[in-house]
Amino acid sequence: MQQRNTSSPLAPAVMVHFYRGVMDLATTWRTRVDGTTNWAVVSAGSIASFLLSDPDHPHLMALLGMFLAFAFLAIEARRFRFYDLWSGWLRLMETDYYAPVLRNNAIEARQQWHPLLVADLRNPHFKISWSEAMGRRLRHNYVAIFGFLLLAWLVKLLPANAPAPNECATIVECARIGPIPGWLVMVSVVLFYGYLLGLILFTPKLVGTGTELIERHMLFRRLVAPGAQLVGFKRHQEVPYIVDGVALAPEED
Image (tube, rainbow, N blue to C red; front, top):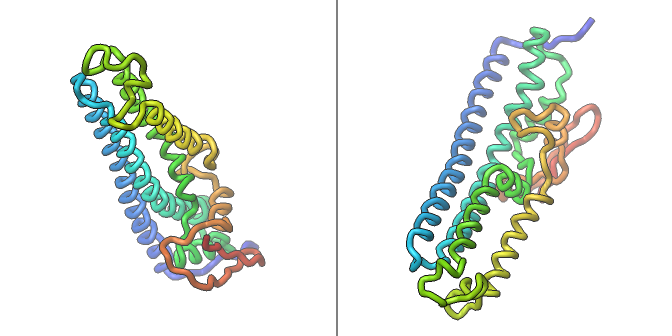
């Protein structure tokens, strides 16, 4: 006979309210993530419009736009790490609590997810690194923004768009900023975009889908990942927890 847990009516009620609370956290942080993307889109469009509206407007504005977009990306990466944390908890409850309840109308006696969630509630750990969050947001949103700013900058550097006739003969000459030679400006932009390309290509990718629809085995791998970073700056001795007879404890980086 299959063993079942007997519990008071409070337990399902607690899980319902806990799920709603975490859902509110995830929704709030998702809104904050989308907010920085909106700021970046509006800023890039405004800068490009200003840049190309008059030949006298300096191409430096495009470079400032790239810096501003990168600042938004860095802010968004931090916010996305928090969103990924809350959405991971939600997905865990969906796969290991609500799915068995809907399937069997009962809660299984042996629950592997419970000690994992409890340990992560006590000492929350980010499941993705800052660079991975940067790469993911770049692949999904910011690659178009940075590509648009680069295209606007190159169009502005065309000799035909120079403020004065014959002021510069090549794009490299037109890239000059005061005493800074054009070749140095071009090299700096190439290095910057090379760094962005590296984030896109070499940061870990979540295969298949995002956290909202991640498969169950991937959830467990993320929860026991040894490289998970503790949220905040508190450092202390972590008490290991036991799952199927194996001691597991997230490590601080």
